[in-house]
Image 1: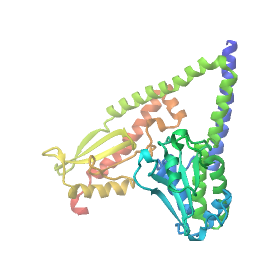
Image 2: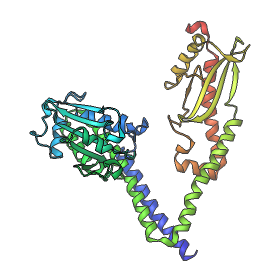
Image 3: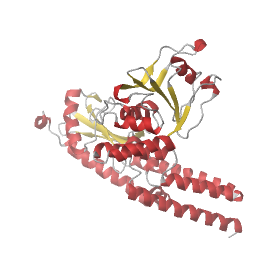
Image 4: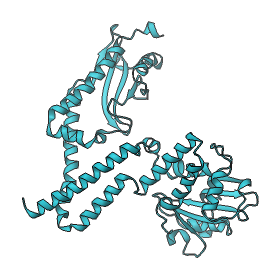
Length: 390
């Protein structure tokens, strides 16, 4: 083994140890389980971040804590009671200040607007990954020169001149990584006796930690980048390894797709009375790996009317609680175990994919297990007597 290979192996072992430690930490703390990630809402500025922050800030928010969280926010960011009266305030999301008129630098929608009874205002422009819009902050400033204007980003970045219109006016830079997290920790502590609120805030805190590179896995990534920078002579080898894994995944997925196609999962099964076909199809889309189930008229090979299909849908739902019909699959579709919603083949644990690469018999057994469970469901659907469930 050459000196370069020895050094590369040592670096990989270091990263491997750190990765295993991070995985253990993630399992013990449960940081991988996050409702915002599960619902694919982790980076949605309006539906997730602005909505969640605004709900905590609302005096009449569903949290039922009145102005508690709002006062913590105002105190955290140095806004005195004489500047903003929390007890008589309202909070708005996507607050319209009129049509955008570029030539006059007016109009737009403010992400989060706080306003008290004396029309004192606090504006928050919320940026996760979206870029600045032309004269965006200038337009908000022109709406109310006296308002406190926050520019909120993941790491406290400054707005571009594109947004400020190259004009000098007060803009306070705040970050999710430090400022918002510190405020959320205070809200969390004040919710000690409110388990639902406390744990929901904690879920959101974990999301912010993920987005700002503060989780155990994020730290492993930083460690790996540091090692690469310390050993530039290994860069070509590391790049080659990086390309090798996607290639392995692609090869295994191609074999998997071929085995699924030849397994007999995709088939039509005639009902005992000969009137219908129960059509099964397995595929992958934005909802992940799924099995679709259709009811066809055997004389026309066309989908039956919903009234009849709905009876079979009830039976499928009783077998697989997550199953639901759509326009393509009138009985329903579901994600077969071990796939969960949104999980594509690439979502399987890397160790599992590697085992399929090194031993195709393991992959065959995996496909056979999916087929076996699919057959069990088909058997129950084929046995359905409409007279029993009408």
